[in-house]
Image (tube, rainbow, N blue to C red; front, side, top):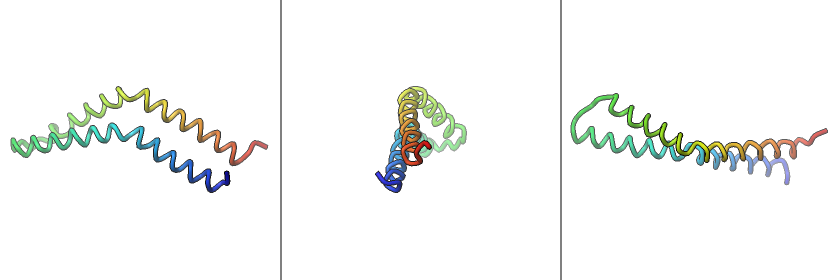
Length: 92
């Protein structure tokens, strides 16, 4: 594998791991934010805390629940990245 191919593959895997790590919390916050916005529009209550706190709580809960999966994905990616760096640079 050439250096360019290895770097391109590393970049692809980096983006995939970033989606695996932060995709679920961002998606959960998006859904909660949409629900709160609809609720605020229906009730005409425009409280900033009402928009922020549910998103914070849901994001924290999702990150706690998916923490081991995220840690495993990032650990595997880090090990692969270090192995690839040694493979590209070589140990002399």
